[in-house]
Length: 384
Ligand code: 5GP
Image 1 (tube, rainbow, N blue to C red):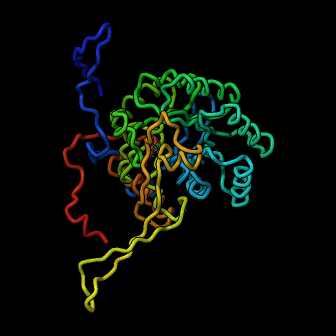
Image 2 (cartoon, rainbow, N blue to C red):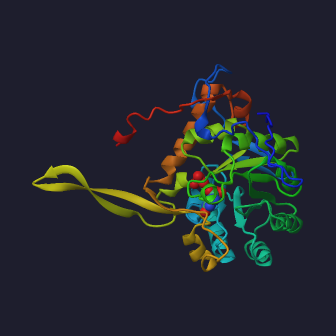
Image 3 (cartoon, protein in one colour):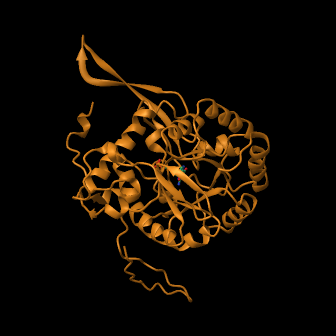
């Protein structure tokens, strides 16, 4: 999508604020138009596995779907289920090397490959984070293939670039995913050291960044912009945040995202952190003179920049910060396996609608249309 630039002059000294007048689109603004392509008779004929050849030399194979590296869904149980299904997985940055070592062991016993597992680190205490990775290497035989996710809500700071460069120097043969960013201009710089750029700021379901800072970029336009730049130098991108329906994962892949990361989609499952919380509601129905009580089940989901997460992991909110994450109670959705199966089923079906024999070909085969109304929601409130 080419950018038409109209610049409104708000001249102040030598600076001018730029207004990009083209509308940036989100998943809900588009649909994938079905079309006749190669003859695919069944969803089971679609190849969901893709071979990724990364910029810094490594190769991995899998379906490019990740769980978010958040405390709630970036846990061992969720990660293991995604890995077992041939997907990719992250674990959050608050696990110790001993805990991660025990996780490696349990995967090994169940014959689950950890080749597609990404270990997350943050920007704070870089020495300690590097040491944690070195401990994994020395004590738990964490050797190639190994993958690292450098996680920062905002990668537009020099510190983030410095940490990325240092991690690449210390772990030259790792696959490194770095982010988050929300514009194409920074992609080339990151790809000097990273293999995958994590794109998306403000789209997350537990995110308050757009409300608190006004910053962010809608996902569809962002994916198009970043994929175009990253692919020109053999880099890859991961579209992170804003997945509401499985169709949005299909859309991201059709737009040329190599990977898609989701948090909220997995957060209501048995495998996500925390217990099921029950709430009781009085209904309008009266039986024997008393209102019928309905019970609904929920799970807690919180952003990693929420006050709750800051209290839990960082000893409280610093006084120069505002909370950029929500704390939510979201509907309980049952077993993660059911959602994972719906994801593979949804992607395979999308491929048959557009005539793509494999996930790798989705972007080539897709025609994207901009729409005003993507879903018929008339009976939604009657869902059982
Ligand atoms: P979801 O799939 O729930 O829409 O989005 C998940 C993504 O939201 C995560 O991978 C991460 O990039 C982002 N995220 C997680 N916690 C926070 C937070 O507290 N604030 C913001 N701004 N983004 C968050």
